[in-house]
Image (cartoon, rainbow, N blue to C red; front, top):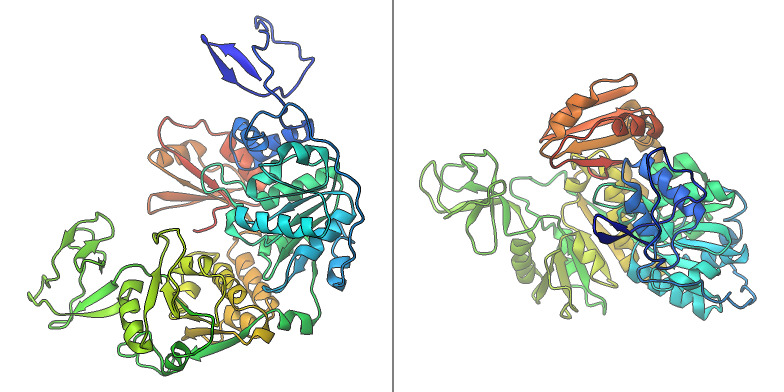
Length: 540
């Protein structure tokens, strides 16, 4: 709707009717009825989300609204027979209200979407708009009526199978009968800006309120999902067949100061003559992330900020904090010769070309989003895993930096990288190989991938989180920004709330559950100024 306020028309939503105004408040007529908005149950779901993630109701209502004016729902979809599926795990997927299906990386989730449609109008979430579009096409070819959000908002309101990405969690569905979340572990389901709401948790609550079954699928389910629902696993033969062969290159016997990134096993991998390319992954941009003087051994670092200097594509040394740049000269002895202790992808690309004897294409998050040139070898940060459709080999040149990342979700996030790589390689029958160079070959993440058994990671990781009082066993929020200190001072130390920090200008606020955390944070009067409040932060 539109209403006249302060001399101008502003947009809004009707969230209640037949309401008596408070004494002294006069009602104004609506200036315009624009079109359809979220239904009453979605408005209540938005209220819940605003409380859960300590945000404003208006932001969630905007997400729940159509991108353009919709005057009326579309026509009801025509009734069509739902095709039968052959997979036994798909037929069992919706027999419980809360189910987590551990689906191998190369297995198509379409059969469980078909089973959702068999129950009636269903909501299917997919991590990205591109994947949502592909799934919608596949389901339409199977003869199912599909509405793709946000484009088909009116059709979704009329019923059928509704498919979309994160925002579809608040989308319309005719008469909701089932909910499916594909790849629930994917961080794309969480909004990066405040409020940092998570689509998986929203639709779990939506299904609970509607009294309908909810299914979460993932090759490696998150601990949050495993704490929520009953785990359903395909047979061992099916699960193993859905993962590629994993080769662990154990580098513990190599001299860390001389071995570099290229093991003997890597040479034969790079010179493979398969039709599909080799993809090498190293999550370090630039030419070098750590340099030492070849004359005196001193590290190249910023004298002001005391952090290592990085070498970018132009060869200059740059401070990661201030961005200041200087020539490649040792401050201690004046030498201009440096030894590369930690290469970035730009330097690695140059060395890989010499090693492989053929052109190598570099891919990072800053690479032109257009089509990549054809090549036999690609190297890049994890962005390369999202730009290549298939590969014969995927090589993680230094996986230990993922396993040892200073984040409490590092193990799960490392497993996610292996899952993404496994998808490029396809099922075991394709013959692709996932090669991981490491000095921690016995780590639970690597053993889980090696044996195609993510349960080897979930158990120990959950116990570690429990001992450290970390999610999903507790609720956590990160407070940062210019006025974060003042906000934390106003919060104080209420019963049941732990405040940790500050560290790097941020505080962590912890509670036993989300209700207690939300009540504590919402009860603080926000100071004027920049404040970033992340509930359920993904990377701390």
